[in-house]
Image (tube, rainbow, N blue to C red; front, side, top):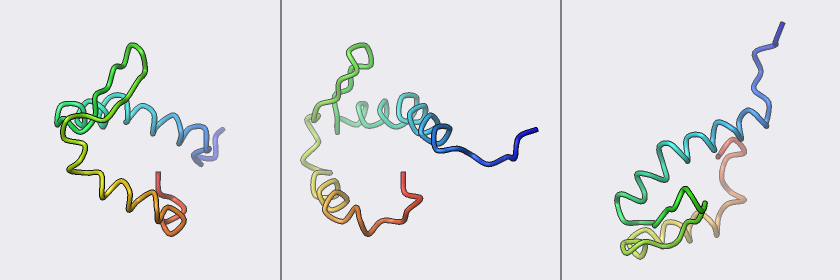
Length: 70
């Protein structure tokens, strides 16, 4: 019988599944990134400059984000 608790490995797997099937395709379609699932590469897309300040803000303040942040 399982406890119902989600392990960190299960959480990581869930994040990877959502990235692959939802987030990366949407970011690619919007032109923010260029994603090649076959080669598993991601590069800046033609519209990346539009979101670069937000990405920089998140990176600069990652220690201030909630512990449960993905």
